[in-house]
Amino acid sequence: MFAQKIISKDNIIFELFLNEQSGLIQVGLTYAIAIVFPIVGFFFLAFGIMEDSGYLPRLAVMVDKVFKRIGLNGKAVLPMVLGLGCDTMATLTTRILNTKKERIIATLLLALAIPCSAQLGVISGVLGKISGMYFAIYVFVIGTQLLFVGYLSSKVLPGTPSDFLMEIPPFRMPKLSNIFIKTFYRVHWFLKEAVPLFMLGTLALFVATKLGFLSFIERLGAPITKNFLGLPVETTHGFILGFLRRDYGAVSIFKVLEEKGGDKGINPEQLLVSLVVITLFIPCLANFLVMIKEQGAKNAFLMFAFILPYSILIGGILRVILQQF
Image 1 (cartoon, rainbow, N blue to C red):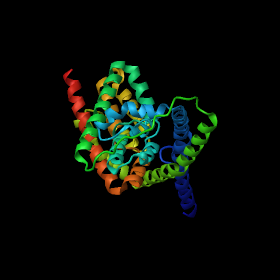
Image 2: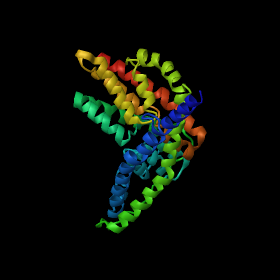
Image 3: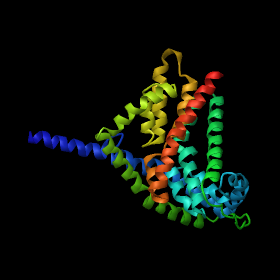
């Protein structure tokens, strides 16, 4: 009996640190350091070049008119583009925006419609195997939702947008010393701010898995997945897995639909609907914790409560439209 308790205790400790789906080292640390860190580091290096060359301010000026339509200004180009690398880090950079309204809108749009690089890579590869047309439809749907929700938020949220004032420096050859110094301090900021949240999020997921909470959510969401979205019940697990790692969610859904396709092959409409939903779906756990840190628990949970049903609604509407054609 005593030996069984020791084995059981050792097994829990092993799963806590090395479990392939929710272990602190296997998932939390690996995801933050081995996957997100190189991508974010490259983005910081690229932004350092853009900033030191004088191109970044010009990019902000070019998109300012479009961003004003959604309650933002040209400064928001930094977190939006950085979100294509990692939404968690991009949410932290919303601090550069001047007003609370702008920071809330940027945070909401990052959580809703900006896929991280890992997820975007999987989605591009999956849809590219089917047809370029489906990838074009995917980009169109996500882009229109970004603009629509941003415009709606700018009308609903109180406050006025800030003025956009930016000095345009001349073009110049970037200095390597400046770029490496900026990159070093920004990477240090990422390791200090984001990595602990990745670990905390992984720990929360491990506890929820052991308590059976995730299995309960999967059973609860299965009827919606099957009847409203027209997807196999098994894809519910993919959506839940996307809360930990959004790229894992996309891969999981693709595998399910591939297995269900059988000899008939993959249903392109199901594939498109599922990938649109998982892109618009709730942010990953680390990003959600950063949202709480930056915007407060109330605003973060309100965004969560909006994004969850909205992503499912858009998926259902897209399914009906695709069935007509």
